[in-house]
Image (cartoon, rainbow, N blue to C red; front, side, top):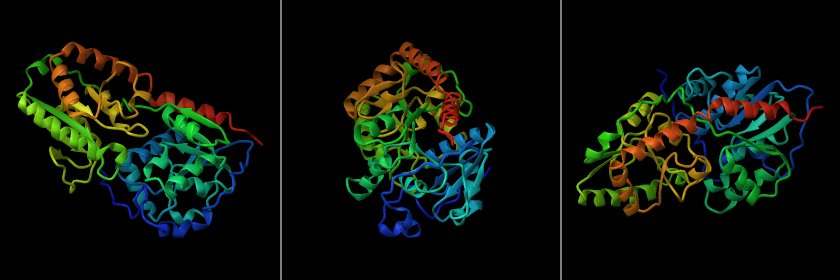
Length: 383
């Protein structure tokens, strides 16, 4: 199996102005001018290299692979230092069997493309004045990546620069419409689930009634406030004590964070491969994966395997998960403890909601996402 390689530059940089020394000339406030073609054949995703375990880049690779299979010539061009070999390695690790061509930073000045696709706010500045049709693949509302300040404003400005925006799911589109002055098309594609790679396994929920140990699979990231790493530890630490007083043991399995980080409770499993994730989901009783901004792929992966999913009202899950397909609580340890005990005593509800989730997931597969993007590309303005 391909092993992940560490990258020199983080996918979301948080340093100073010198993070951008190599791309300074691209940062300006000129509006994008679209160069139309009679036919569009080549597509280039412009990205912060390819980082192992990166969900957004995995989505990019999956989409690029499907577009390649649909007949487009697809490229992944890095605007940060990373060798082609490293990009290819991590692409294969993130999405085995990916298709498309990886290009390192040295190709930026020579590469030509009919369509350019920005994948992070920085890359929107890079592509907006290049020759070709400019698309902005909006996978999150990126001002929220930062405290209120200059990076917040720089990210927000990218939605107002005239690029053709395509929102992954409804939430990003809503945020851009509500917070920005939009001067260009703003489309939306389905937020998909990868059913094939996260197979369903039937559970016997009647066994939950006798459980005295409740096992949780909890996805969070130490370096991403969007995944509520501090709050989730507070809540679970207190919930663990409440359940202990009522005769239950809470076994918490954190994943998604570097292995060397220390959680205040539970076990840190680190960053897991797909087979390891499937095994974890099948061994646990409930899944938790907070999303405070755009949704994570992880909840759908959990639900795809048949793992009952618990989400938080303070997050964005309700924009993506159909009614009666998961269980909601607040960031409140008493409420969460009560919910866990109640669900363990109610196998009928567990089975019903899991069945609802499975039915819903079959309606939001990658086939639908591909159909959405192909329809958008087929109706691009032409020369």
